Image (spheres, rainbow, N blue to C red):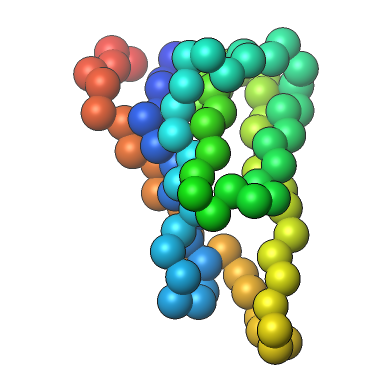
Length: 88
């Protein structure tokens, strides 16, 4: 995936709530670390992150959710969207 830039990454869950949307931002730091962690806490309005992947880099999106009742919440699927032309 090196060299690919995604415009958005959507995290869809198994409940009826809208997905969490992570939007690409060139202003977000592009880390030289092998593992880059993004905190999703309070990200119901969305989150900005540098969605460029370098060889050997792993991006981890993590957070917690609270609910008034017990639920099994799982990530149903991820949707990465790129609208830029890319040569591979």
